[in-house]
Length: 113
Length: 113
Image (cartoon, rainbow over all chains, first blue to last red; front, side, top):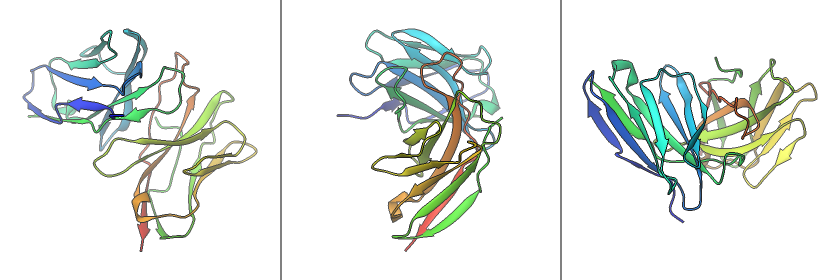
């Protein structure tokens, strides 16, 4: 069974631009969570989607948004990029939102110049 | 802020047991202890979790003190492939709407031949 895939793997943007990252969960998984990982702040929870609905949201500004499609694929969007948004963005999937075992993808490395 | 403290780094000889400690003195009654690990350049991997009883699975054992203020993750026979950053986190059980997981800096475990 294929794992969680994230595209693109690497991305370079400039301040003020917006970016969309994509995550395809493991087949059959309906819950997708997004995390931001930086050297200074560590791994922080962004939001979680299940059945196309956002179930939970971390403490990030409104510039960070996401959505989930009917096939469980998810996208996250960051508008008006800031230098501090440079990070590894990780997506994790699980069968549903109650399952403890989440499977993480390799991440998208975003660099904001 | 992360609610756990872990040593920043540890070494372990290959084939020996690796015992990774974690302090979570402010853990609430409805919070579980979870362990994940992250091998360089990969997404985190779920290892194990528990509430108050000791737990064991094919990867590791989790020992939680009676007062629940600390725990130890045990890798019974460490191999070179266990070299990774290990994260101990406390969180309410998956599925709760206020589950906003925060990862601390973790422990960098080096398994030495």
